[in-house]
Image (cartoon, rainbow, N blue to C red):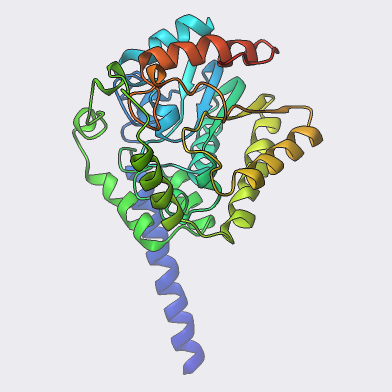
Length: 311
């Protein structure tokens, strides 16, 4: 009797699992026909096609995303002389989101000659930038591949549930539009020591020092992804107006090690470079002048096998 009950329960679970998978498969990829340029959307999937070749793919947080906002993406491609896709995510998308988006990029048959990861040190320590980040899929259409990866990488149930809600979105142009256009046209007037101190305390409040071991492993996963797909990857520690940032030395050491161990990996620490306020619109993000300067004097030489020359 018990055996019969267990068998029926297992059959019931199997049938329901198959039914649920079928429903999710039906909804997966329904929005692949929607294509928007990087400068009109915060979404990666809506800017991503299939079997496309890029000279450059960018990874990072909002500090990388600004390179595409406000039409800056077209300026970036013109300066670099190559087609680029920006997979950076605003809202502090860290190493886990970066690995997920790059995985899907390759899953769709796309290729990039070079990947540049624009590094912020805090993403190596904080869950809010990684599995607890609730921004990096808010503007992304539903794909079964991504759902499966969220489950496999043990993202929290609330992250998985919020991604499932994307099935019901219809107006993708509205939901994925950058909410504060024009910011990169501005300029930081002065470095405010009080705001710098507040930013430092904010990031420290999000820190989980023991998270470094967990999150730094995603560097190796990203490197393996790039190698399997025939590309090269360069890590660039972005200029930091916050001096002696906690954890910087650990991140620097990790990236130096992987660059020394792998021929397809390079690393440049530019944290102490480019501190002129005319290059920023706030204490963290480049403005249009800063983006152009960074593209010409860092990204362009790096992509051509030369040393960056930021001042």
